[in-house]
Image (cartoon, rainbow, N blue to C red; front, side):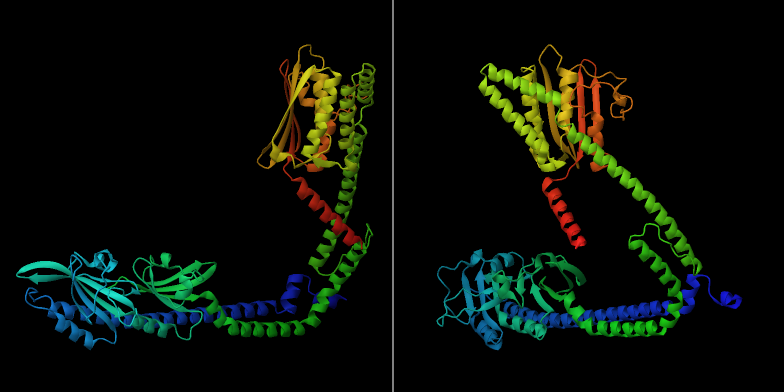
Length: 607
């Protein structure tokens, strides 16, 4: 036994360190995660580099194409326009030769005066009569800035009558030129219209065989020049983040567009201010890594299973005292409130057993305390229900009704009976202790209507309650005792007509109900003690009113909603008294829903 005691490890931490390969499992998991993370970062870097290379190559192709447009424009300007005197010369021959040499990519070349008059064009065509080029963007952008080149967005070339009735999508390069006529220099505009299909071919090649990643082109204002889903964009079936991307600098960016994370690479196109944008949704990268992720998960899972199988025999020794402790807890769970909690095993298990044994004792004590608290709560609620119908109040009310009938005041008698019936109906509330503030206000109004008749309108009552709180909950019958006290102790014995005001409002997450009277007020020495339990002190003292005192109302609210809720009393002699009720802001509908759900769950547990 001594040898066994020496061999057996005393600490569960030491037993786990010797018996289990937990650190190996953790290390393996960390290693797998690290390797996967490095692989993911490397793959992402490779994807970014590949995207950058493709973007740069596409940009070079576009710049070559646009450079060709510029060469055509320069050739036309310097060889056919700059040194000619247009009073005796024309540029038709040079323009036609230039067009013939580049007609595969060239749609047309035109030259206009600053007044919008056509000087020459190739191929030779008849300009439409209703065309005024001075209002077109390419003309306005070019005019007045010599040597500056302006590239347009794609548009339909609609300057000339076409006998074949074909219209072409073009990219226009416009620039201001100097026109010499009899030694006098004037400004004109040279327009080169290139076939837009050439740009499409360059970008379609870059987007080929790539369904998730794509590339699009836009101008310096964010207007899309080319997009693989351009038709869908025109029909508003697809949207692009081009208005935001126009502010991106060249390089790599991350963005979230329409709840999707995307990697965006930007490359500016020389001469134009255009930007070539490559978009790679994160989902495409995640799909690339999915196979690797599954392999790493499978590898780690197999290693974990091997460790579990290897350590089953060792873990059995550690589990034995824990199983004995578990058996004693099951005895407690079965209903034995005084179970024999097992104490033994390693130091930690032994400590756990002692702690559970102590916890069982504390829980048993807490259960007794809760039971007593519930008994007090039920006692308080029962007292409130028993005190709802004050025999003295009922006697006086019925006596008043008899007097009205004898005096043939039938309408007043019917009114009193109706109000009394409504009062009792809300008082009963089908046994409910929680009702809506709307019902509580109705009950208070019924009660005050009866009291006003009894006191022959000796006082007036005002109800100032916000509509937003009417459908919130309250403990039943909390206003009637406050109103009763306001009558008996406040305004009931006043000779002059007095006033009682009932208010209701919400402030943050709390609701306040107030009853204020203009009566005699309360002695300052009594105010601090009004909400104390004065059962023993007041025993044998005859009370006026319903007997449902302030303490009773305060305790019912406290028992239902907890600390922070209940009554506040403010009073000044010969000024009046204000009693404020504080309640939580809980809608009656949500309260009923939760109550039904709890009842359903309780029923399910019973089954």
